[in-house]
Length: 550
Image (cartoon, rainbow, N blue to C red; front, side, top):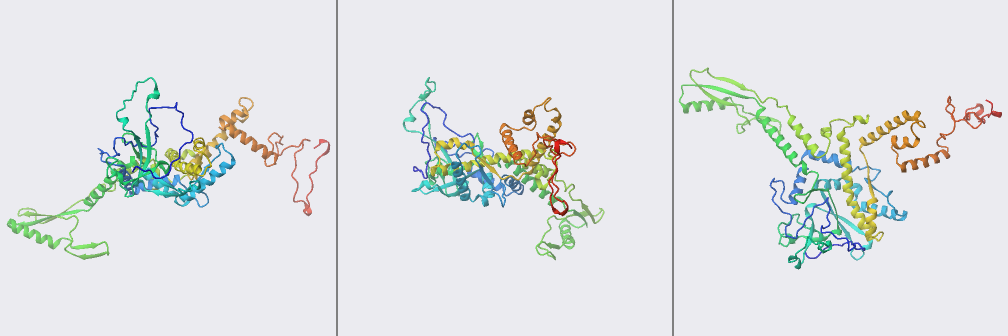
């Protein structure tokens, strides 16, 4: 465990010695696992949900077997990752990157190389699904140790239950007896804690528990932080320091739905059939003989026909007992004699309101619109006012998931570019903020929303047109009504000038004949179109009146 496997990428420019802080560097969207005290993240959960991260991931995977959960997950994954035969599921966007065209070309080539290593075009759905369910995903970046400049050779998927991310505070023997003065006037006196980050890989798919130096924990392999590409969901239980999946808040809803469904089945099986009560007149027979007589009558008249569901046959077999037996009761002399009455079956067996409630609760816990449940609420290509607000929220949720999942591409691309000496680690810190990833989109709700907004804005422009130059300026209309940015205004003006010069669109400043709508020439006459269908097939040139007369 003392040796670290893999490679590390370090900045060539060290941090300024004046930049000091008593707070160690951490990531707000990731869990922190400190093991300075020997504790390895094993604890007793009072609620009984999970004891270790291993148990938690196992529970997430068991939840996926539930039909409603699987349907909701498929809705999310299908929205986030669109597989098209013509387009790639994701493309890199370098429009905002301030770099030369040569660098941009190399970045695009390396990103395509990474997608090929992942086989993302074919496996995008299952990669994204595994990340969403587990709440984390790991890839080992395999490189040629003797030729690291050749970059990543292979990306090997690692099961989430076999990996553990550790941030360990390194302490020496002197630190044990050192007393830190927190009230010192000089903040540089505070010793900056050294944090070692690494992964522990356990091929047996079981998390070790207890002390890190114990026998169970030593069965893993320490792997360097930069040798593993990983991405988490960004959800962290701050009380327990555990990375969660987006399925976590649906655990209770799934269990409730399961119990309600099971209880409903039991109730219907027990209450659905009608049962009969046989009152048998036993006269003055003694107790023993009365019971024997009752059994004889019961065996004589009871249903002996049994239906075999496997073969579809009905046969007489006394070995089989009916699931719900009838009632046979003796009646003494003086009663009303032998009598048969019927108990009605359960009422309101068709009520499933509670089932529907817990289904909707489950879908809401997974941020999926309940209207998608069982195909309810067909897709309406109408006005955006008919679009459900839940769908807009769902679109934003999927967008956040995509942003989070893109961190995996960022890490792989960073390693590839640095190993091939295209950029330095310092360059990446500047570039990473301007690199975007465009996922293929298939949600028509947002398209309808944008179309409706554009129609409304164009309608407002038409209404404001008589007042342009009187109360409003052209610039005000473009910025406030059409909501165009400075970049869009400059870009559109350039394109319009090019199209006017090329004759694609008419010049709006030229006078137009109010009757024909045709532009008027300098002499005051409308420009006539040439007659292409004249007699003899010859085309005649348009006649232009001289002297400006019409």
